[in-house]
Image (cartoon, rainbow, N blue to C red; front, side, top):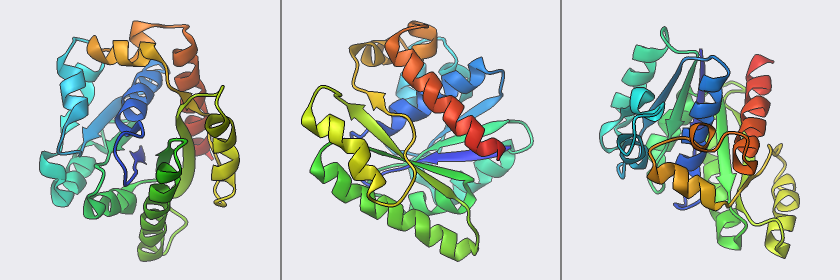
Length: 215
């Protein structure tokens, strides 16, 4: 089993969107997926309840982002799932740290705003703190350009800005209307708009993550 946490200190950078749609792509690969919603806002729970798609079957609530409950749920599912995805909350470093202490891989999304880049440094520091506590190279850390508008100067420069932070950068996820439409339908983009540009982006990201986890 692999454990992947999606983290960031700042809200609105696409953590839940990435976690939910990665679940869809991994399920399409034939993997058994559990998605732990550790954000007290429970955006994933709301998304899942809006329809009868994949998320309605695999999202599990972690009450108030409780670190102890998070670890217990990870242990409970580790024998039954190929991948456990954890959506962590913004502004709750204890929960994010506990996620990093059990994760094989931390995905740190970042938007193109300079404020997003500033907040990313805190998420990166927490991930490195977990490594130090574990005395391990885990969790591995990857950065994900998120909510990118490629035709803007900020969007075009985001990957370069992230690479300058010294961590490897995975394929970007653009800001597309179809993603919001999928959420409103309670579906992942893979279910709502297969073959769309948005779905292809999430598929590319999922394949990159899968390849990384196989190493």
